[in-house]
Length: 328
Ligand code: G3H
Ligand code: 13P
Ligand code: NA
Ligand code: ZN
Image 1: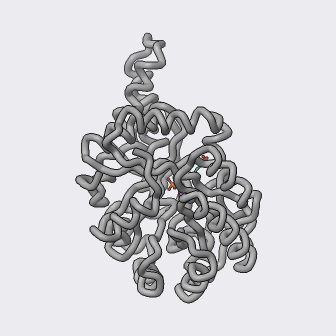
Image 2: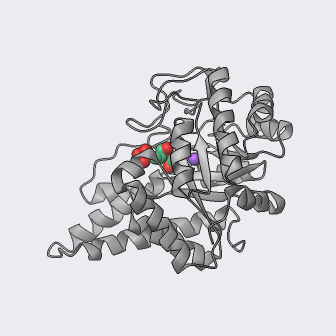
């Protein structure tokens, strides 16, 4: 059944687990997520970005998610709009039937320009008023996502600030977070604690302090009733990079957020964990390998089926690691 994200995250907080929020763009991702949720008895958050709406078209995305709800009626699903850049964008998603929206007022409408606190409060408060009147949950964002190692937002063409960010932007201030939640009434808050979007988060192998767990603890202590959200939570599996490169890809050395550090964050109030890049890497690796090993195949269902199983295994691993399994 389609349920609100608030309800789902409240349950996660009560029982101390986290829920991965996977981005969806196509049938294969949707099917992989639902099959993994079914295999592990997990609740599901699927989110659609502006890029996904552009790729698949809003009606196709909507029906893809509704089809998942129809085929898996026993699994709770939250249908979330990722990185809305204005109250108007959120309003359109609410009209389309999304049960949750993100109003990302940390960046301007171009998704690239860091905005000031007052702008963020203003647009987020407006989105919350509208969404709550419709029973829809809202995620806000305070701070600018960026790698603590490189100071960069990461993503080349997606959502993320341009240029190098300062330390004060890279870590959300706990006092400001408390003020922000009080002023906007958001249900969930995305925080900057060292993650960034995309595959290029860190240039060095992680040594256990990729994230500022200390800052997560401080924020959670100030706003214990607000669900914390970690964007940029892909782990960039080295085994998939190796497969991609073994079969003709050219992805330079790069590292993501270790699953163990995310699990540590979940112990301190992180409830929603956004993952997109890992599904992309698994898909690409699966397609490259299949086509290289089966050069005479030309039925797309053959290689797309490989992407479903690759993504399904990855989703199962996250549902199990985050404690989501068994909570559907
Ligand atoms: O927030 C970024 C997500 O990975 C979505 O990326 O805009 O390329 O769909 P996208
Ligand atoms: P990744 O690029 O690390 O998968 O993050 C996705 C995300 O935060 C979507 O909002
Ligand atoms: Na989001
Ligand atoms: Zn994000």
